[in-house]
Amino acid sequence: MRGILKQFIVLTALSFGLWGCKEHQHDAVDVHINKGKGVFIVNEGTFTMGNASLNYINLENDSQYAAADVFKQANNRPLGDVFQSMTMVDGKAWLVVNNSGKIEIIDPETCLATNTIKGLKSPRYILEVTPGVLYVSDLYQNAIHIIDAKTHSITGKIPCHGWTETMVLNNGKVWVTNHNSNFIYKINPLSHVIEDSTKLAWGGSSVMAGNDGKLWVLCSGEQLKSKTGGLFSINPQTGKVMDKWLFTDPAFNPIKLHETAGGDSLLFIYNGIYKISKSNLSLPAAPFISQPKGASFYGLAIRPVTGELFVADAGDYVSKGKIYIYKPGGQLIKSYVAGITPSDFLFW
Image (cartoon, rainbow, N blue to C red; front, top):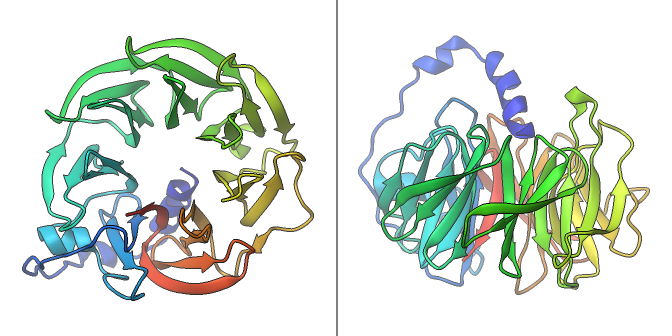
């Protein structure tokens, strides 16, 4: 959401002449992607302009589809407005398009759309909670959507006040962050009922299951509301907080929590990439990876087979962004051009 707010500010400064520009239509192009070769890049696009896109980088030859919108190439139509996230479910890629209120389902090898689920309010992330049953978090719905993955239909909702964000399945329970509260919620995926909650800090934005058996949660806070966030670990069996670091400045709004390949440290974005030891939850004097001048780090992922860091740079949120790849030790390897507002990755 931080990016959407920035995009809106930039958008209002653009000339109205931009709205009159029309793209030329082209015939669909065959796309062939081989599994295990690279990474998909989620490009949000600029809020309200409908220019979201999907890139793919073949990491073996460094160039295949690197800067092309493979969804538009394959389907001869734009993806939509604000591409939020991408999840693999039973061999298909599910693309959540937030401001368009829909989910596009594609074949990841050809990028051809096979189904579209419409009628969602403001979807964010997808999680398969039991075979064939998906939860979809939402910004404005005050509920989590329940979707049947086989019929591609919305079968119900779980009331949950406020902006639900990232989710994780752990020990048979679903944990979901809430960006407009101080709580993380625990849901029974069989009954679709919220069973419990744990009080943390404001602005829950990232939850992940660590290799240490703990759940790790990043609460980003909110500067406009003078709300501070924090970093927490939770015992998934008891729901109790085990470790915590409470932020003191409402302007400190880190995002995109991840675990290093070795599992001993955590990474997040805050004007650079910070690396935090799990045994010492405090901010280092300097970022692990500094943000280049003019850059705006907005997405982060760890490549499973190498431990390399993939960082998305949204830049000015209206021009093409960049992807930086760093060694596990923080040394820059290479960079690629991406679409507008790159924000997430899916290795496939």
